[in-house]
Image 1 (tube, rainbow, N blue to C red):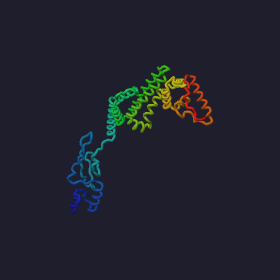
Image 2 (image 1 turned 135 degrees about the horizontal axis):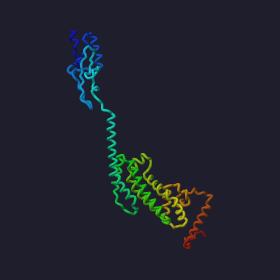
Image 3 (image 1 turned 60 degrees about the vertical axis):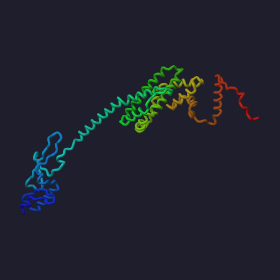
Image 4 (image 1 turned 60 degrees about the horizontal axis):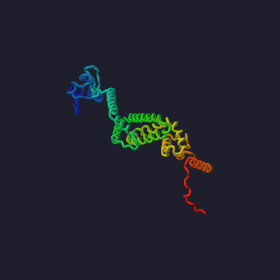
Length: 343
């Protein structure tokens, strides 16, 4: 009976458990139960060799497990190192991949993909958009230019989806800035008698071009300029005109406008109204440079009327009528005026 207790099988698990040769059955069972809580038990047929999976960069490692006689519980010894361990598990044989190597690989892949995407943008998308922008900027309001707006919108959509919004916005503003600098150079060479008319032509052509450019860049405006920059594309492009054209020539333009305003019909009234309203839309504070000029075309430039100043207003109107009559604009034939019904 004692010999049978030395080497016994667990009736429930049918696993082999080694115990000390000379202990009592009670101490043997207690040692076996405490050891089983720490160590993983193996059948007798599996106690010969345990082979680990291959380690990256080395040969497959074979861990030989030996039974240590005279020990309480199941303990194993690594035949390579001779060190004693209390358990054998799957984690002992598994070497996790290094996080540093994985991060380096992912970073390199992302960098290469981003470089390829930027190269594709530079070679394919932006050249086609640049050609379309050139055609839209130089067109006259009365001309018809065949431009595929659906194709332009498709290019813009792809650029935004490939996370090139910032790059596209910078290229667009730089392209238009270069165009506005060319306009400013042409205006500098314009003679004074034609300066107001030429300025109006450039302003009207630019605003007409924006009516085509802003809609096709709607996706860029919605998902980058409005959401991230908290601005509007049209306002940004009009500000470019104010900075690179109007601001440079306002000191030349304002005296010419005042002179033309004092001499009726020297410049077409429609041209005067267009230039004055355009300047006010670009920079409202420019109205303070010539309040009398701007108040003739834009309401609420002057302060509100005061009842006590009504005689002054009437005197101003009479003076204006006198100046018009002296400059060859008579009041006309008053004989056909309907007679008053009053006696």
